[in-house]
Image (cartoon, rainbow, N blue to C red; front, side):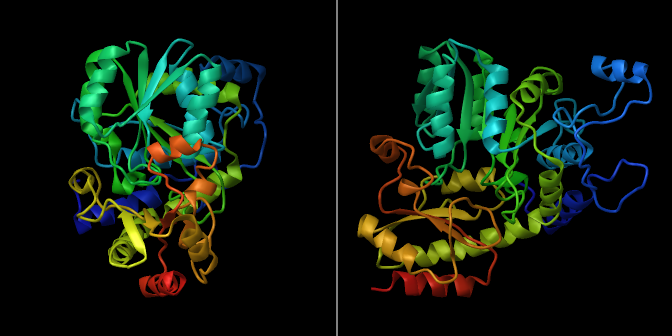
Length: 410
């Protein structure tokens, strides 16, 4: 992806810190935590006008809150950073901050889809997303078609054969195989059919990858992960380029689902984002060194990391991403028992699900994040019993490697 320059990095750092400010009368240096459920009207007429949408202002924190609104503006500004619209003007986006990534996914799907519609998505997918599509959408009469989205011919055929497809949902890089989908190619295939395209940008964040540059309609985040960066709060974000839709249908769905975030979690998210570019650059540098080391270790059968030249989507990753990111997976030669032994012997790296925190997190997808999937579905997604997922932190890389070395020792 373009803009690898030191100047871009410095400009993005400034944007992550200064894109928002307190809009209250006290001019707080940090965005305050507006811990209130409701807001006072100066008059009956003001309340009526706010409910009617004739006057801006806050009503009730399930609808909007100054702290959560600041986080929304910050995320939208970073996803749009440096991008232009068709008229050559700075790209404008709208974000909605949710209580979790799953909440953001629900708003996306129930804003766009109805019974009889279908979603086209990848076989390699986060377990929670897979279950949401397979269970909740199925109960609502919405079909999900799981195919290999990295195969453009297969995508073209699916679009030709299924006129019920209304949304293509991409996860790139995919969890946990690190497959990368050609975002621009998918958007071009979807355009003639009027199909919307969304992408889970959790692994990449807007610093490493800006999907709106390639034509997507929506970006989705589990803000719990790299955006927050410290594992202190759960959150999710839905960002859209259709401002009218985001402020109408999507906002109404968001309100009715009760999927809103809360002021304190939004406050933590804002402060985490201030160091996002610094963290992502270090995460990526550490991960590259760890992946190269693992690829040479005799106990390791395979390493899935899009920053390795051996990865099938290495070239595509370089086209779409500034750096390959922090997450990888690797398969141990002796399967499940070797994986359990490895995880139990870790001394510094953290045994935990989730990812994106400053410390290195290691988990076993088949028994943890993807345990809800049927074994045959996991294998189709590349999640074998011996697969280990690793979110490389920003510790001294020598310390990470020492821990891995002793844990893998025979």
